[in-house]
Amino acid sequence: MIQITALREQTEEYIARLSKRGIPAEQMVHDILDLDRTVRECKQETENLQAESNRLAKEIGVLFREGKRDEADVLKARTSELKDALKDKEQELRTAEEALEQAMLNLPNAPHAGVPNGRSAEDNEVVYTWGTAAQFDFEAQPHWELAKRFNLIDFELGVKITGAGFPVYTGKGARLQRALINFFLDEARTEGFIEIQPPILVNEDSGYGTGQLPDKEGQMYHATADNLYLIPTAEVPITNIYRDVILDADALPIKNAGYTPCFRREAGSYGKDVRGLNRLHQFDKVEIVQIAHPDLSYAVLEEMQQYVQSLLQKLGLHYRVLKLCAGDMGFTSALTYDMEVYSAAQERWLEVSSVSNFESFQANRLKLRYRDENGKPRLAHTLNGSALALPRIVAALLENNQKADEIVMPEVLVPYLGFDRITL
Image (cartoon, rainbow, N blue to C red; front, side):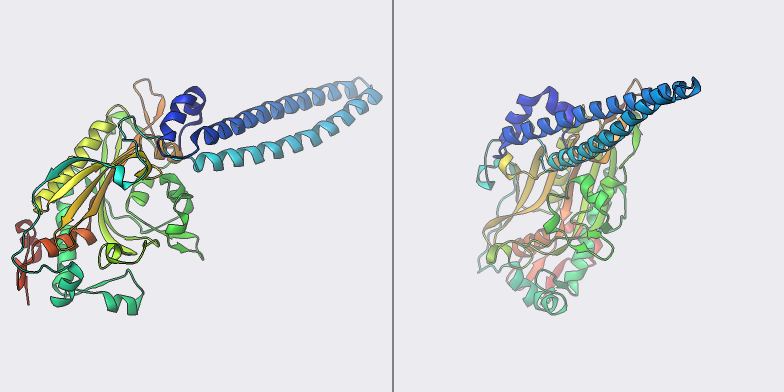
């Protein structure tokens, strides 16, 4: 959530930045500022009414002590009027505060100055490419055919048990999942991240804290009996560890990593773009989260995206790095890098990671602060990234490393797998 003081003091700057998203930013910001003025005016009027009521109460006491009952009764009638007026004004204040809070929650983060202009994925900027596409002297198969041929993933069984988007991994397919999770966690630990095993259900406060609510409410699985939400990513519970916390500046940056299953109701359209592992309702992911000093958060962002690249390089996957345009960024992000691996069998790029700096947007919702050199609480910056999401990594590994009658595994995974190839 953008700070209301920032919107007041830098109105035109924030309108310009938010307009890059293609939203009616001027109207949204001015509506918020109008509500803000109403709230402040109501607070002042409430305080004035309360002060007058307190003053009259003291005068009434003096008049009673002096035996001036008639004069005291006149003032008592006035205090009764003030009480009713105060009650009405307090209700007006509550209504205005609720409207302001809702409007602030629905306002997305303002893009960083370095975010490209654009409205859709076609406008994203390719900033780096690594490796070359796999070449085949036979007809390459997509991963859903390979999964069936080598008995690695059963999509139909997942439909039977649960529904579409919930695959069942079997045999070496299941072992590949576990190997990737352990590899990513070990790499994160080597990089200085502290491993966290968080809950996979969160309450509403956690959802609002990181910005999934209200923005993505319809995309989250909701356990209504307990009013809990299945997490779309480990970012949500891990970042909420620091909700309502004031950190010491010398503790920054804080680096956490965690593996969780992730759950997302939306599954997009039908067709090859969402077939097999390309888009799922349940999938596994290792997430990295950092809490950083505002002056250093963009240096941290660069370190994080370089770290994700190092994982892709160790897996030997041809990939590219995109800087997302304003119209394609997530609701909470100020700047996002996407990493996409190339699927030689599908002949298309598959997103496997997003690394984002949220600046103080999440921290303001979370009341996540640190003490500056003067001991004054300041909002920290939060960042997160996929390191990595498994489904499309698995898809790319199977497709790009396939041979005529086997699939060769990356060398870095062999110690985790216990085998170096998958055979018929």
